[in-house]
Image (cartoon, one colour):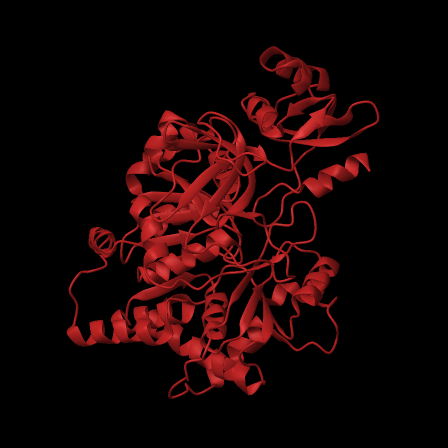
Length: 522
């Protein structure tokens, strides 16, 4: 990335403001010594702004960057004394709180790989994941005692309470040696269609990834940032990385509750919020409070993880202001495109445009780029594209670009996602994209949420099934659903099956679990 662009963006976001010369030297030395992974980002922040509040959470209240580093180094020493070192792999099963961040930065500093467990997994499923990922020990929140009971009895486990006690009693080490290779963070894929896979996160080699994001999303140094997205998820983890690089104050709530999140916007006055789309949907179901807008200092609401229902982005910005930024990406590709408020005012369902240092191509089945307006497979390249899954498998790559697994098209300078490339349904020789039907039904006033999938059919190969959850006080029949689709779409888009549910099954990151829906037709 052009150094001039890097410098201009950092200056624009308040990262180059003068400070005590000694602190600046320590900051740069930390980055040179420890790199741009979590261990380095924490140390640069603690050296430059030690008294700045790093985290506000429900467990401890306020924790400064100096305190965060001290606790992290104690955990590094505890793990080393337990016999863990470079190349070993341990697990973390935790919600959003300060200790989780301390563990992440601690493992990074001693070369230990950390597998971030999904808090939505059942015990047997988590046991399978732990075995597949080769986890040798586990740190977990107290509440997950039943989940971890399915692990082998000989596996060492440390609860959050036990770890907190050991940290409180432990002396701070004088100095930690820099590992020859920093520990990797392994994030599990969503597992919406099967067992989650592990994808190792690359360590940034410089300021490039940070600049790519903050050039498009106007985060600033020392912002207060509410991270509602789970930090074991790609988006929440990225938010934490960005926050540390900006020496920001991170606000965490263990569990997302729409009422608590909205209260935090007024009581703690964050400048930015990181969330997943379903969280905003739940916040919008609360009674409207137009007067609250003037009481907030919210400048950015950054989301990622799934598509919005049709028309939702406009409704949200009408309530909260033009503060919504949506990042389209994946665990494997990191970021692909970012949609700004202006983009979504023009085209509410757009994925936006690629940020700095990112290449996006729409390719056909033969790997050739398709003309603008035509659908094809989305491929992306950037500095943090993953190296492959921990099981040795990978995604499709063409000319250094990785497949996102989605179909899409380009209109003008804006990209649009048309659905998963493996979700396209061929019914009676006609191609049906579930996202088209989902978007249409999401606009119906009675529909709260909807998902469309293909299920086996003896006559047509596949048939379209939709699962619908209704808004309170509304009724709808299967025939009315089909009639609504018939009035707005081609005949082959009409669902043959309509299943009504109180709530669609989702994982902890808000994605609908299609594998659970398919059980209705097993």
